[in-house]
Length: 71
Image (cartoon, rainbow, N blue to C red; front, side):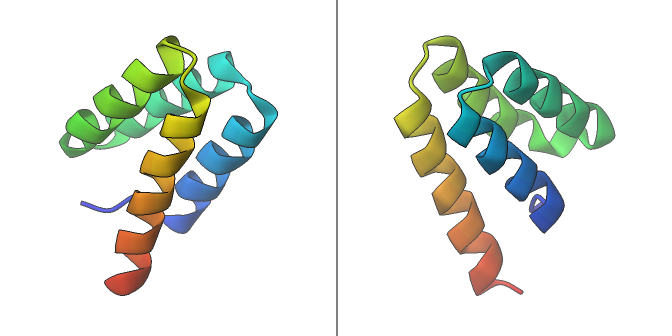
């Protein structure tokens, strides 16, 4: 399943701000809404917890590019 544009936008905005707690909270909400996002949220969560925000943003960009190709 793909994340919707609002979720991607929120995750990017929080990443731009470096708001680690906000990102983790949003990832929790996404995973609770649809457990099929578990693999993606776990990957993003690992980067955020390690303060690897540039890599987090690269993963989000890949997800965003994939979503754009399939819309």
